[in-house]
Image (cartoon, rainbow, N blue to C red; front, side, top):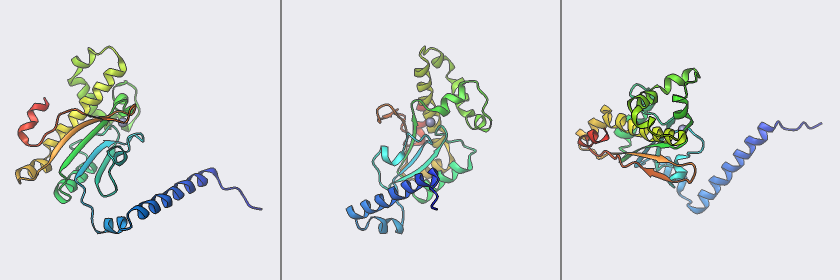
Length: 214
Ligand code: ZN
């Protein structure tokens, strides 16, 4: 007697079928696509974004495999003590020689909200600590915003600016600028509500731009 497949297996079968369809469509429209990628990756952009499933990096900016180097974590942080982020940053700057680093937050970020709602969750409270520091530093501005959602969205923006500061003050980036390497660091916020990215206009292209971040 045949036993029915567990529903979880059926679900993964869907993913595998999706994958075969995607690879076939890519090959049909560009027969050399995958063979070109096996040679090397030469992305011009590093994306530092949130793990949120509603913020799919490549899709949002219409980039193909090979065009975007991606690092994602809860609340798009760039903590100067995090070996994972630092490894990605160094590889992107020193080896891939990316031209642009995009720090991309998003409105309605659950990580940002969790950082300041006063509830205890465990390990993630430690991870989110930098956001509480940003919150404290901008308490006056944030307290003046009456609407809670608007207040959290402003904190999402301030968090992006804070992470842009971290990236630009990192020694890998500083050394690259010193060598004459061209790197621009940008702060963006993505809106899940309309699919659009908003440029916070905090772009840093040289060390002299950093003080303007506040
Ligand atoms: Zn998020």
